[in-house]
Length: 166
Image (cartoon, rainbow, N blue to C red; front, side, top):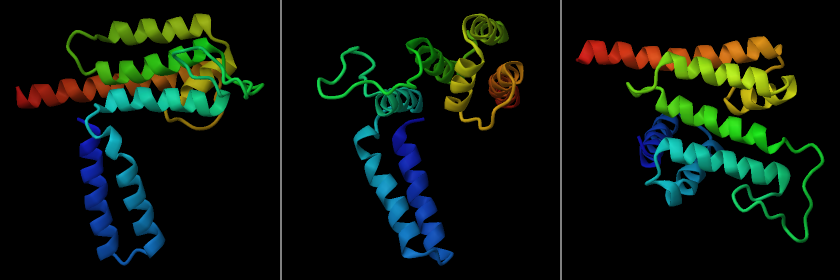
């Protein structure tokens, strides 16, 4: 799946909300999102998700992640997450994309979650948890379990679909 597929979905949704009588601001907002995705239309969703993680890193820290160079006129914000947290946030999003492949098993999920448990403290785990589209402030263990469950669900749903289609 690529970003163009999301654009087409948004275009279809726009038509539906117009037919349902949505206000002009709602229509305009959907159109703006559609147009904003245009430069990225050939990216896979995984690559686009990686880009969004990098963009969020820059937005929250004023640091360009790959170059490691800080802007000469800006300094990093004091509460910026450590680089390890960003790495884990990027890795979990990539694992979410990769887990549907036969070569990626449940053991890869288990070892990744265990690695985060050993190397990250509670606040760092919660940062990854929030980047993985969860909300709230659970305990470290519950956050890790929720992320593991989400990865297991994705893996299982694709295995079920393959069994039905295969």
